[in-house]
Length: 339
Ligand SMILES: NC(=O)C1=CN([C@@H]2O[C@H](COP(=O)(O)OP(=O)(O)OC[C@H]3O[C@@H](n4cnc5c(N)ncnc54)[C@H](O)[C@@H]3O)[C@@H](O)[C@H]2O)C=CC1
Ligand SMILES: O=C(CO)COP(=O)(O)O
Image 1 (cartoon, rainbow, N blue to C red):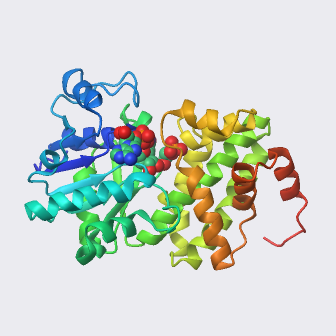
Image 2: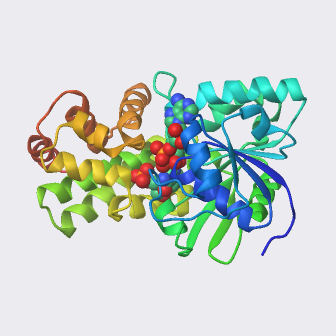
């Protein structure tokens, strides 16, 4: 068990941010978590629960929540971001203003998985533009096959801390490691962030196949060919091919394409069962990152001239109202290829 006491500020109190905060408290750190919602802050501080995001879980009483971002960031030696990708730039800009005022230069970690719409940027790129331009290489991405619901049960979970700067990655590894949460390091942050973002697209497809009643052969095929196209685009964008066979690549693809906990899989499953996209989004009440990442990846693939037939099919279903069965049939009738 790690017993070095550090002050960590966690920005974002959804299921992932709050359970990572809980790990850090249990590892002996002082942790303050920020939420924009006072009601959620009061619930975390008084009942030690966060029922909307993780029902039936009681957080360590030492976890402190606040909606005052400046208070949360005070004396922080590490800042962990865990907000949805679409909120990352504005939240990071708010954090930047406070860090500047207080002359703080904490280690920056993020645990989010997506690409920014319009710019197609990775999370560490967004954060470095808003906060840490001079320490771009020190930003760490924490990623891998991990669902808050299982971490809450102290089930075994393995993730990767990725940074261009190995020392920063190792520091984050030490901060999070314990007997059920094991952290590896990786210096290919491009591959780690891209694998994390793109697997959500394939998970939407895996859920849809399940919802339509397809069997295991179809799901295995989707995951395998999905990984092939994820790697193709990832390599074109500068990733190390080997990263895609690691925890943040195939590892995260497997869990997100097979777990009942996955928001992306569940969204796909509901779409496969014929629910309308807007109803799926409204009823989920949590972020479904794959929806916007599908658009970003589709546009990036066109820009890089990379063939991504599965991503294209999912894009057509989500954004062009194409019938899912027709999309599957069209995929199957593509000209024969070599693997
Ligand atoms: N839930 C999980 O098990 C895992 C989630 N992730 C990633 O972590 C990130 C966060 O995911 P979750 O915690 O599941 O999301 P969530 O939907 O459970 O919670 C997101 C949190 O961010 C806040 N938020 C949303 N929009 C905001 C805005 N505009 N400004 C400020 N705060 C805002 C929400 O109020 C909520 O507290 C995502 O990128 C997700 O892919 C990664 C691994 C596991
Ligand atoms: O990234 C995740 C699992 O590793 C979480 O996936 P979902 O957002 O689909 O729940």
